[in-house]
Length: 167
Image 1: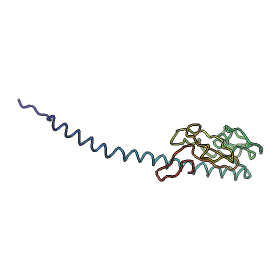
Image 2: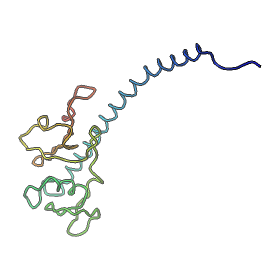
Image 3: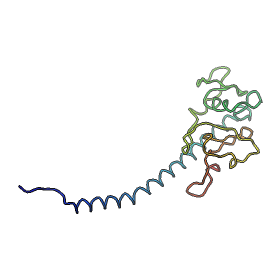
Image 4: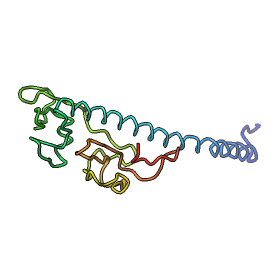
């Protein structure tokens, strides 16, 4: 009876070829992951910035972070964006507008920062640069309520050398 099968040499050649192919392909996919995160970050920021502007338009130029003209705690901002609000900024977790909460919701949920997976927002003082506040761990997003500016809380630079907090 004749045994059929692969010789040890044939198996070694196949495993070597597979190893070479993996060494070529894996770095290509790793670069695509970083590019996808950069793209998702830009899209999330564009969406949030658009909705912040809409909020300001519907609230007589006052951005999220204020209630009845006074500064509000940071926990108010997500509620103002995902719930409904009055013209003075009082927020309700309800997502269906009804009197007196006639405005919103602006977002279904606060998006995650693709790099640190956090969807929390942290206040940054108006005079503080985002570059100083960015630490990558305390929150997903950095927000200046005075100017309605929002930035990604992530340090480092992207594939084109742009700081993530400068998106």
